[in-house]
Image (cartoon, rainbow, N blue to C red; front, side):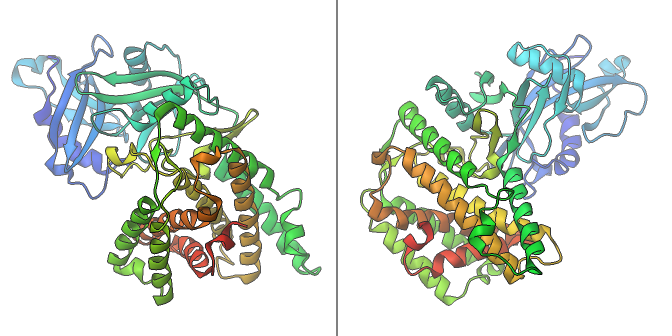
Length: 469
């Protein structure tokens, strides 16, 4: 079989297959695919395989496809793209069943060796993912193939390698980067696999489940004070939140040293917030979650943030920091997934910004955990006032602990003056909450109350500093 890619046949098969992939944007037009670039891959003597980049609208996607010769109907799996009937001159070789190479263990093992020179015996999918495809090899190597790509350095590759050079040991150790120099694309990264850890989201929900169970049990006996309940041994997460704040501050200091800085201004954060407010206003369903006073408070917060001249440093950021992006192991907290918000353009994700953007993302995540734990209980949901008070007390205690750890460790000259900190942090949180509300209304309407709660609580404060003490 010729190493030439059978694009005419693939272009007929790919649209149906792509529509079922979680990492392929549903708003894209899979039937208008274009082949942007490709190269043959040697994944086996009798295995035609191709690395390719396809265009769908304005987005570029990376695929690694491999084919098995077959005279029978191939098994129906989610990794099967389809069957290619070869051209007349190659028909003696039989038909080709074309697969996503990362979904078939023999192909995936061969790809790891071909791309990075790493040999392994076993592999498995990492698990729940939406924007990329990650595999674990021999329970020691985590290989992440980027699906939505662009020319230029991938933000995660750039930052993980920089942090490693700086000696920041709270990211998984990088083991190699697969880069296609011809097209200037970072294709994949291999990192140490941290097998014995618990992600921050699961740990936080475990703390909240204990707390809500305690609250329910205490109801008949006369509910104890909230503070005492939140500090109970089985439910207290605050020491971990403090340590997490220290880790994030050290990460920011290392990114500042490694990738430089520039002056930040309040107008930058004000612009980010104004943009998020504008998107929220244009969404008829989402905008209905806020009333007139809330819109006025948002506009006032934009104005207050814009008046801050010196906002500290603008540095490279994680960009999508929340409890699901951190892992607790025996050595402390590790930070994962440095791509930023994958739907944002590459240049935006590589832009320097105030570290308060990352801080705000983590603060919002504590609020989300509180709301999620109540939603999880189903029968009480978000409307039970007693459990709402308990969950909010948990979130408040852990937000304060995270922020205390962060501010204690962060270089003072990287941040705005204490008198300006609350306004800018409130602007960053409001921006994130507006984004969350727009997303949830569009994709998970049952969760829209989560960001609505946090946003209204933030906007109802007479002084932003009320939220951070």
